[in-house]
Length: 174
Image 1 (spheres, one colour):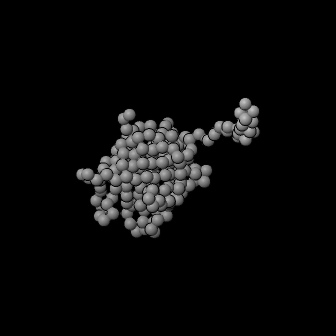
Image 2 (tube, one colour):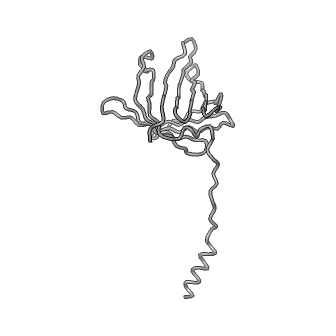
Image 3 (cartoon, helix red, strand yellow):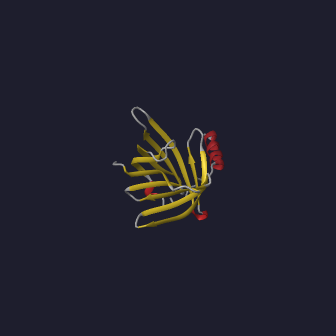
């Protein structure tokens, strides 16, 4: 009986108080992005940029933190060929910065300057860009409870603006 009392007393002395975790709430501009989406990726072929390719695509979006989205893509790339992609978009809107990490086996992170971020009537629009290859890569992300659109335009010196890619999704039926 004394052993049991002694063990209880020692356990009470070394036990740490339970601390509740109070992480910040998710960024309100990003909450509509969370969920499962179905649609397509249309992109300019890299070999022949005037030729557009379209892949049926699914994406699942979750929070990795209050300002970070985790994206899991599944692309239908033709008969019997499925392609997977993983990305993280970490928004630091206070510093007008987005760190976008692509890939999981060999991750690559690019930093973008956020040029605008707003939400009106449930529609979030975030625009961001970065210098690239003698020009600028510009992105526009539009999210509302029913639709998701992410476009990329490439502006290069002495060339026409190229619409490089467009992800267009509708919320998947649950």
